[in-house]
Image (tube, one colour):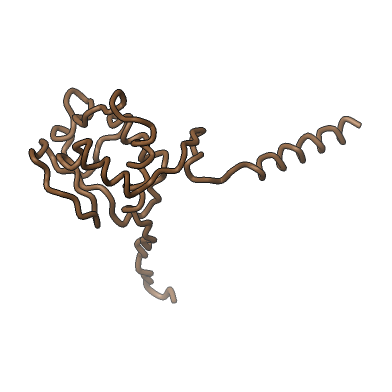
Length: 156
């Protein structure tokens, strides 16, 4: 009887896991409403993001005043730029600094120089920004390096 109970519990657990929503916005235990990419582009400009960021494939106005560094966003990448990663990059820019730039140009005392918008940005603005940015990242399968096969001596 105990074995049957364990099997039923395991089966129910698997069924529940299989029924879970696989929406990419739900990764990491956070589920936000969908954003509007067109509104996100407008927010990107109005919040002043264009001062420090350019976005591959987006026709954005030149900033009135350029920030201390121009960080490129959007591109073909070997990994998927997840919804959660983009949300984290916006609400906690010190979580991971831009890797293509010297740390001294993108941080001060170990913290990102990006403005913290958490107290001025609404959740709707956040989801719209993420929708806009995510549309500019393209996952690209990059084949790994294949080492040549060498033979030595009498080896075929």
